[in-house]
Length: 399
Ligand SMILES: Cc1cc2nc3c(=O)[nH]c(=O)nc-3n(C[C@H](O)[C@H](O)[C@H](O)COP(=O)(O)OP(=O)(O)OC[C@H]3O[C@@H](n4cnc5c(N)ncnc54)[C@H](O)[C@@H]3O)c2cc1C
View (cartoon, rainbow, N blue to C red):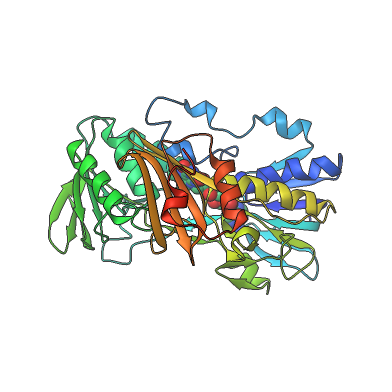
């Protein structure tokens, strides 16, 4: 073993980096090592499908901190290092080269990995499963004006990326099995209205279609769905993620839909915590376990886990919000925004500005604030109150 650290953080994404701030609130000098398998300094992912494409951010602005910040906070960095095994008995993590890192407290902030297509051609070289800065770089280099891209998936990543590429004069064809955009969260009428807006912007939308095969043609690809064959220069898939739980599983930690943690983000091993996209945690306000794949959760949960690694023992009771931008349709959402729930819409301008409420047993479980800004706290209070509400009660409740 090379060295022992008071704190070892595996995963240098937002959750892992936020943990550093949490640790340093309570422990100013305990030795911290932040290990990540990506080569870069830790960065923010949301701009990869939005601001970087729209000229609202430059590449050098997406890094969470500069190198000096890590030095100031006494953090050693190990980029390009993949941990492949944990020995929780000996409290050692081992990387691919066989180097061992001892720890007193460990945080698993390993995030999620893109789900992959299982159809023939899904593993062809060049089919991009978009998540990492490296994916942005390679796409940006090839997707110049006039290039053609097939975007597979009509969820968050697919819908954002299609809009971003189109804004760069790229010819875009979207393919997804649902019959409306972002069907998991948008009520059907909104998803279909946005789908029409996408078409009006020049995006070809093949909704309700499954990809059955991807093949090569010359320098490009041919994507075959159950109804069409589409030739393109690039194929990008955004079909969700699966939590990176392999280390936890191998170490014998409890794993379900993610790494199981208690209300203080501790795993089934008290020396190991987990946070971010990989953690399956008790979501206090919803009264059930959840795994949340969003930016605000990764930051707040990482910070909370950091404090707890340093001995704070605080419960994670934050109600995370998330956000997205689809052309001029921007929103913030909080709580359970599952389109299968009872949905009440309160539009000021139909499908453009208003609030969507998601209810179960007459109580608000979630709210989506569509082009309505600075109201996340109001929405949180409504969900926490847990009172039964009618359609009439909700009209104008948030505006
Ligand atoms: C393109 C894109 C746009 C997004 N936009 C939004 C948005 O608009 N709003 C929103 O709320 N959320 C958005 N998200 C989601 C948000 O970015 C994630 O929820 C957040 O990044 C999760 O952070 P994390 O630290 O938990 O995990 P990750 O960001 O996945 O970081 C985990 C890190 O750990 C590394 N790792 C994993 N296993 C190992 C190992 N064994 N050894 C070493 N390193 C390892 C991974 O490679 C990765 O670098 C977006 C995500 C993407 C990809």
